[in-house]
Amino acid sequence: MVKPKNVIPDKSIKSTPLPRRFLDSFFAAHLEFRVRLFHVLAMGGTLISFAMCILSTVNFTGITQVLINAVSTVLAFSLLMYSRRSGRYQICYMITIIAIFLGLFPMLFFSSGGYHGGMLAFFIFSVVFTIFMLEGKKAIIISAVEVLFYIALFLAAYHRPEWVNHFESEQGALIDIIISYATVSVVLGVCLYIHFRLYNAQQRQLDEQNAILAQANRMKTEFLSNASHEMRTPLTVTSVNVQVVMMMLEDMGENLNDPEARELLENAQSEIMRLSRMVGGMLTLASMSEDTDRVKLDYTALLRSSVEMLRLTLNEQGIALETNIEDGLIVFGNADLLAQVLANLLQNARAHTKNGAVTVNAEKHSAEITVTVRDTGSGIPREILHSVFERGVSTGGTGFGLFLCKTVVESHGGRIWIESEPGNGTAVFFTLPVYEGQIGGNQE
Image (cartoon, rainbow, N blue to C red):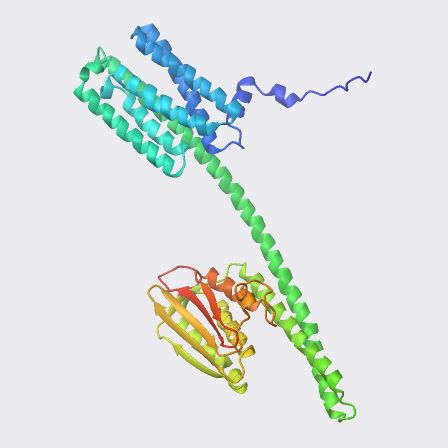
């Protein structure tokens, strides 16, 4: 027979006092705020009802009052233990609202002086706790029902004073009001204390996590930036060497100028340039995760300057560039990123248009600016039109251009979409919100 090994008892558990362990089981840090709140309510209800039961017995206020407080004590304690063991808190919330707030409280209202007693404080207490424990429309509807129900009780006590068990003296009414006021104040104070303590702890944890994420994000961006610069240098050298070899082949004459070799070199040059653009796109996407400075921008001037920088390149390829950019367009954003959007769209139009035309329109509609870049090129195949804004989807480019445009536009609160027919050109539309006094970065 194998003897069981000696188990070393956990001294920390034994050294913790029993009352402390009992409270920790109901207010542990991992428990949801509503759960802790309900435990406060149930414990407070148990203690208060028990005290009122003893007080009613000692003062001989009547068997009805004693029974109501006794039932309230048993019900509150039962809900506390049942909820802790079963975890079915939503059911316990509803039982509390129906049985205590809408059941026992009205009985105590009529048996404790009506609106001349202290139950008014408990009615406020019940509405507050209903909003705390429930969520959304359910909380609003049930709390509104409680308010209307309690108003109906006030009217009933006013029109039917014989239903109310009035206090025999002003002293009795005063004691009841003081006890009710103090009880509700203590319970609500404890609940708010727990709530703000939990909130502050979660806020500190969130700040720590945000700091860690920000540091990791900066490290990622720095790594990508360094990698991008390191990759650009050999890419540039390789591109220059390929061009030199192509020129040397041309100088050697027709006998040594092999068409097949020239085609291979041209393909290599094309792939080098594509990889270079991809590296630039990756760096731009990575830098967008950092907080970029956004300011009030003259978007009209930005669009016109961006168009003029590419006009000569387009004209050299036989592409006419037409513009219709409205005056006075103002946005709030990052100038470099927004300029990159238009540059990417014009480069795409140039790549798919031969001896055609490209049109850039920008106009204000209500609270947003709509920009349209339209070409008369080859269009986009229908099978990829629905996914052209996804990363890596391309008809021969890097697959980063339109994805970058979408990311930038949406980060500025805008929308972007595309219309295209194979052989009938492409139109890309995007919107940006009009500047409305936003604050950030360096204001002009």
